[in-house]
Amino acid sequence: MEYNHGMRSQPIYPSDPTPQEWGGIKPVLKGALYGRKRKSIGAPCQYSLYNLLQGMLLKQLLIVHASAHKIQEV
Image (cartoon, rainbow, N blue to C red; front, side, top):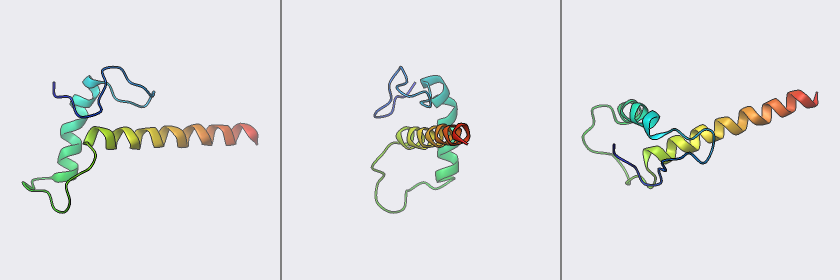
């Protein structure tokens, strides 16, 4: 399995995908982002696809967590 920069064998946050989950997500994400393009357009990416996905999943987890707390306060 190919490991990307920043990927750990054990997740830090509950939203972090495991290496096995990433193996299934990576081809889908690459296809959605790049399609059939052979060359990227613009500046090179500063972050790996894994790190971008990790950030998006963590953001969603925090939104859900915050929403749950707002509901309990009402």
